[in-house]
Length: 133
Length: 284
Image (cartoon, rainbow over all chains, first blue to last red; front, side, top):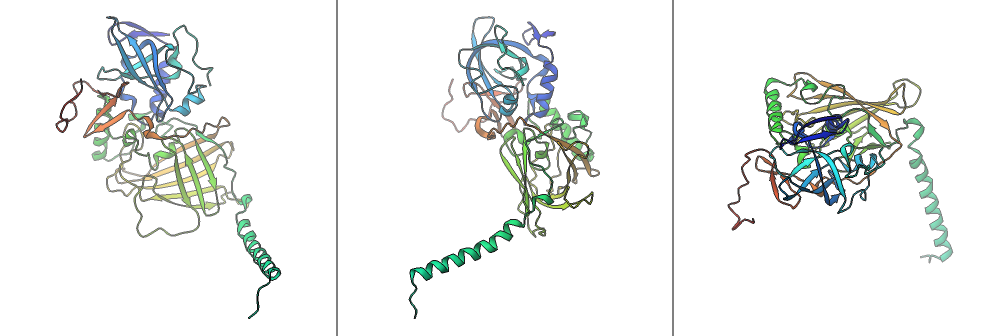
């Protein structure tokens, strides 16, 4: 495991292998993932508002509560549905209300968007979301 | 004039049907599967999603670009580093086109028929690539397309009486393409020529090789890469329609992002908003 500072200076923890997984993801994506700041990835915990198992990439709309108590819904972009199916995910893997945590690379603008990969995503209590490949 | 009895009509019909069958059978048998290689499979790329899978992404690709096109590529990467998409039309759901589609991002099927070989490619949107093998000549005028116009020739390289190699040439390509994500460009003249040599690996019949040579005026020499695809028993046929939920938005020369509530988000710091002068009011 490794740790780094998030965009707001908070200490965040990266799951083992996340850097490699994200690099692989970026290489296979149809658009450039350089738009997401890989140098400032941080853990996000929140409540799933919507899980969109759609092309070209799967989305989690995640409601995240900031330190000041305000809530924002983040548009978090994953990989292609085929890749998720290969990783054991289905369109029913998440539902609204699920509490999860993930490592997100934010938009370089700082707006409420980012990217994630399956390897760095779990339910808040640590249970895996899918059985794996 | 003789009247046609029902019996005679029936007999005539039977003869016509028999003749039809007689002629149909040779036509159906014209395709002798034993002459062609066994490429039926769900093929998944064996290497990375970069263009040359033997090299690292972005600058690690070391494409043999002319100075002019190297500068365009550097500009593309600089734009991406600030949050844009650079020279990567596929970001806007434009098809990858040839030769990029042969990266085979998420699965491919090959169907061999006597006059044409089809490549059914999933990502980023279901595409059918046709390679004509009926001996046709090049058309005088080819309407440009992303996949281009492909003519192939079957070859029996090892002389065992069965075709083992498909040689393909592709012309007539549209220009808004790039080799891969970082935006390695093609020349704007639309004269790209792609040559392929496709064959099963001698040591591993579950591996399909595609030696792809691109000849383009943005390059100082032909650029050859070898891509490989592995038979994957875990077939994942998911319909792929790129524009279904596309969050990358291009307005003018700017790249924006669609947020969770459908709102437009900036992708880079201090990015100007789109020109909204034609709207009477804006929502808050």
